[in-house]
Image 1 (cartoon, helix red, strand yellow):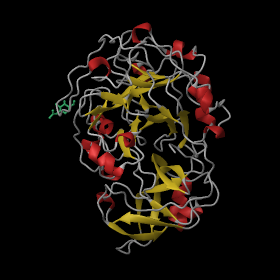
Image 2 (tube, rainbow, N blue to C red):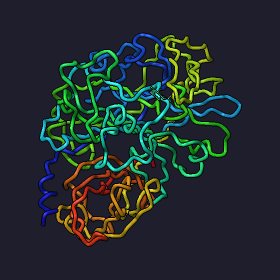
Image 3 (tube, rainbow, N blue to C red):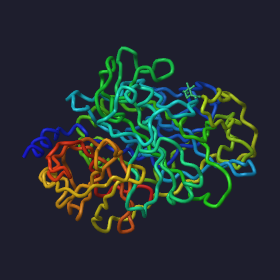
Image 4 (cartoon, rainbow, N blue to C red):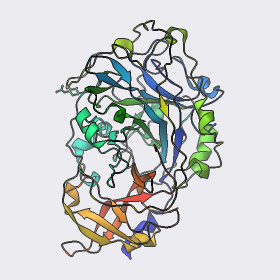
Length: 500
Ligand SMILES: *[C@@H]1O[C@H](CO)[C@@H](O)[C@H](O)[C@H]1NC(C)=O
């Protein structure tokens, strides 16, 4: 059948990925060697990776790290984002607990171009997001990718959609897909709906202009988003494909249910539009290239890649920053009377005024600077769960019916499946495939591109699933006409649990 041929045509293995589990923060501190080199940073960050991180850290420093708080010992990269805080109604501010550290996904996608994916070169640094941004210009909800016109394809617009605020409720059979909400929901929404907290998500640009170098001033101008944010075609001048980095950090907003106040990012942003993240590669280039070339498993598991030497959670948890002297006594966790660095809370819509780079650290009593950290359980998977399927709550409720996708089964996605689709794909932000019953063996290979991740609960375990976009032939359209469309398929990965 046509669909089977299409699926086979896309079985190129180029959308493999791995999920770097950076289980424990190195620390939470006002350190940012990209934005505030050599000084006390404007706002506080939660930092992961090589232990040689510092206000002046660069590639050579990171490579010289003795250890890393990420799972693969070879990965001494530095990953950091602003920390996440709660402002009580009496004005005191404390950090929100981080759950399970950070996941740094490495998506290996070529946008169907067949181009080689190149390891981050030595000295590569980049920033995604804009700390001063306080508004959103795109339509809500985001229309389906296939309908994005010029307005939605500018780099500024793609960057807006590279941020995600995922409401976690592991009991909800209709989990949100990643990168579907591009703002921080308010506290009453979080209290009512997100009983397992909020997952902050950030996709980095994966297209590189080699001529601009590895780390130009500002750390942004050398990279660009492909035209589907996490996949698609690179813009002119940015023709080198890099691994698509994607950060996920879970914050325990549920610990503040019933308390009066608001959540705010450490850069003084209560809207989420100014969320951002930083990356300095700390990989030996050959090692990373070897992983990119050979770790083409589609299940994301680090165990599947022989390039990596894996360490345990206690080993990762033991890796901490050496705090610079002038920050030793700063208590970013609070509770304190202001955000670390006394950053002003500014809700826009006009851009935030500059933060207070270099503001001296107050001399708090020496105390722990680390946010409370909660272990991810290593509960064994008890059985194969079925994936419920429905349109996600944020999309237009135009659910139209179920269609057979036996052709997808032929490509190895599922044993028996049905697809829920909307009346017209132009009104639907996402479509999930129902897999009932779920396949009994891990799905190793199929077509399509992974465009995000989400979680769901079954049998007491939290599962992380990748959302894939695949080409299918709909054989039972309401109109009766068989038409090929792009749909989103939800595809489970055995054993990928996160945040339980
Ligand atoms: C929205 O944000 C952009 C980028 O920060 C800014 O240039 C623009 O002025 C803002 N719009 C409004 C209405 O403030």
